[in-house]
Length: 206
Image 1: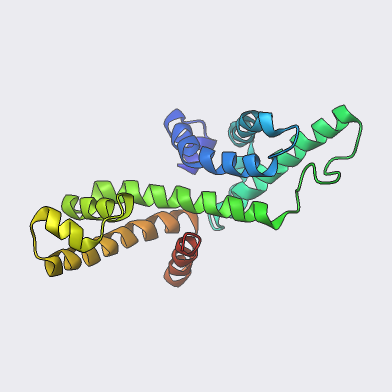
Image 2 (image 1 turned 90 degrees about the vertical axis):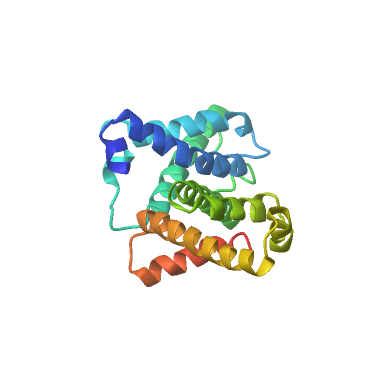
């Protein structure tokens, strides 16, 4: 998908934007909150994707052997700095002066990480819905989207709670496999490294 987007395939570019626009928007929104650039977040998002998609753009430099999260973070941060420098020139003052643009704020990396994790979890949910057992997919939806206890789901379905608990365990395993597939795509490495990255992503929402 990333290679196709770099080569200009419209379907891959649409998929790339669908996956990563929320991540870029969350980071720029947090970075520019309370500044004169707060109203330019969408323009900044567009600039990031123009940087990615232009001829010989950022996506041409992607190393498939390295985690894509770090690459995208670097692209977004560089665009943010460029926008801030333009703004500073208009105001005739140095970029990143005072608290205007908190480029070094470690909390911004955390914002990006949470948005990144959410994007991957949503992708795993979509994958699970197409590959998992339909009944177990619905079981997870009721458990996490509607926040229903398993015993209440069992009562709603008129089934033995112990049986539904077993189905719930199987559903979680199915979802974990979907998440592992998604993470492996974005985070090349050994199975152990992929497993640890999954745990790190889930810990962000613990």
